[in-house]
Length: 509
Image (tube, rainbow, N blue to C red):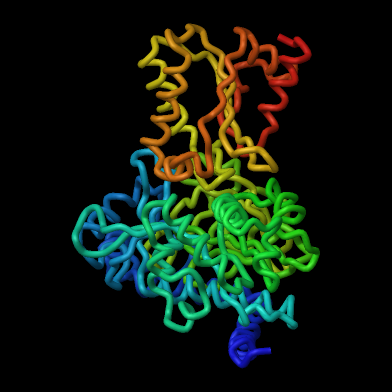
């Protein structure tokens, strides 16, 4: 075992007592974070507006500060991006993590302060590896390189000062030198902006390395690994990297890809799969017990104060939010966070469900709205409605009902979206309708556009045109006919697609 592997394991294991203390007294950890955030926020424009100087309790905070969406906070974020400081957070903000999902813009930009970089994202990375070592004390993961598959950076679109990009790119650019030493590929390659060239270069470089771990989204990871196999002529990745140990994944559900990874990519029972809940807004949770698939430990000492809105309150303008002490098992909650980057009572858009209250473990149960995020594309209903509207306008069509979901990547199967559409007025050209729908989704959603680039992850969507009355018959067959029941527009699973297609095959229309 190398000296570097031994040293890093020893250093990282020193973090375990802090994690254990947080697990034993999560209320203390959250109260401490709450006090720190309020104290830091008092001197900001936002803090003065909401009288943070007289906030002493969580109840004060909840009564005085509204629950906010990205659209609510965007005017303040935009001013920060234009160079103003001390608006939402007192520390200078020069970095912005970029993601899609907003209803009023192609992308959303999340401020990244020095505190959120160090005390949230970097701390999360260290604790991630500490927990992995706790599960695999015999690990030799640091005898090789960690491959990270991230995004790209670009200049701040509002100012010449600062940068914006995928949170993975922001983190990669700011990693300390010791962390850069144990990762691959180089920063220059990792942050290349043209995805096709980047994947090719990453494949060429990393195929020659002793890679022992991967941190990435399953979809992009598959694209890279398949390219490496094509370049090397090997049958599976363990023939390329015989010392590989762990795939750390997040951002999209892993279950649809599990068989492909375990049977074809890494055909060995010795490979570990570890899940994280890390977003542009912060690092939230880590799988601390490898036997609990999909369950992650909520990390409550990363400069984030958590609140949870019961789903029956989720759409209310003034919802009742619960603190960590008030949540219950097996109930879905909309996640609300206040962070050391200046997000205050911010709706993340995710729903979570607690599987354990001692310690607090959760699963990401979905989004607060219908969506498709099988490949990291985060297509929301507003995106779909815009695409349908423009396609109808371009072709003289009228759509009565529709639903859409994913076709997952598999052996011989390319990832794509599948749509079922019922027209009340047929398009003048179905091909043109399909083209405009796809092009509009690429225009309004930057993550979908990235996945569609050169058909690398997502190919053109498949669109089925079904006879009139199909959706009514399907809803009736499910006992859901009536004004309170609506056709689900988007789903992150194939449940509705398969059900409707089966209904058609059986002639139930």
